[in-house]
Length: 86
Image (cartoon, rainbow, N blue to C red; front, side):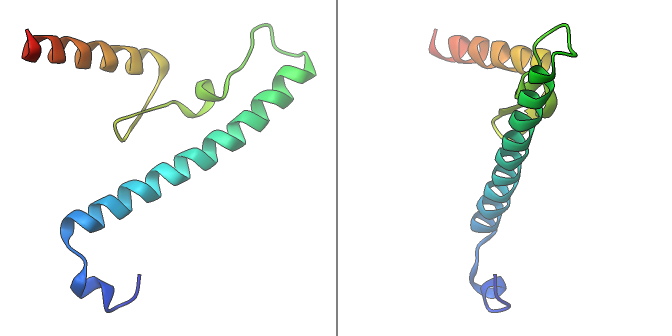
């Protein structure tokens, strides 16, 4: 962004830019975690398979959550949508 952009960009547009920046960074971390998982799993030194999401978490509506937190979050979203629709 240039200095002039700060006077023309709305708060909503700035929020979208920040969200996109955070998501792009998370995708890069996921790519790196995938490579790390391949190395760890290929070494044969682990008793269980390591997945990239175990290392970086799950992206849920702008939040990075652990596996169980993501499952709980999705359950809450489904229950809320059923209450609204039913």
